[in-house]
Amino acid sequence: MGLSKKIGAEFIGTFWLVLGGCGSAVISAAFPDVGIGLLGVALAFGLTVLTMAFAIGHISGCHLNPAVSVGLLVGGRFPASELLPYVIAQVLGGIAAGCVLYVIASGVGGAESGFETAGFASNGYGEHSPGGYSFTSALVCEIVMTFMFLVVILGATDQRAPAGLAPIAIGLCLTLIHLISIPVTNTSVNPARSTGVAVIEGGWALSQLWLFWVAPIIGAALAGLFYRWLGSEDQAAGS
Image (cartoon, rainbow, N blue to C red; front, side, top):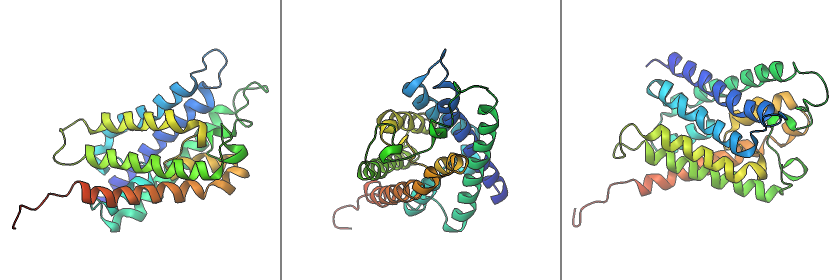
């Protein structure tokens, strides 16, 4: 596939992730007669990755996430020459989804919509953490969750892994990550997802956004290094 098709796939895939995942949090989780809550939001994020992995995995690899691209690069699965175009496409896809979500969510009148006070699904720590968790808790959580996400991605897409099942493993892993970490940071593990809604929320969300770039990238890079060792073939004795 040419690079233009790859970045087009990354744009639309990340758009779907942010629209589906953050949309479920901004619209459905807060809707009084539906209230899908934490479980529904976690599942929504997992479903966006699962569906897009089947739809565009064969075109771009379905990264949808700058941290994933970095982790795959460090793990020897992705060329450095394509990293910047992928990241730009992912961030633009996330911002486009944030804009569309804003238009949809702002169409309901009255204070009961409340998406502004909920932070527009932005990621945060301290007073902006859903559970009031500290900066340190947020930092550790985002590094560790992204690390484990990349270990699953690298392992599930290994040529020795069962063929065709990677999207399921990766989607379920992201669901589990959200079940653990929504109370801590509202779950990022994805700088493009964080940026897409932070630019709409502005203020505190933009001031804390740096953490949701740095921590996921650190976790992903560490996972790439770890899987290079874990997944390497052992040399036969005496060879």
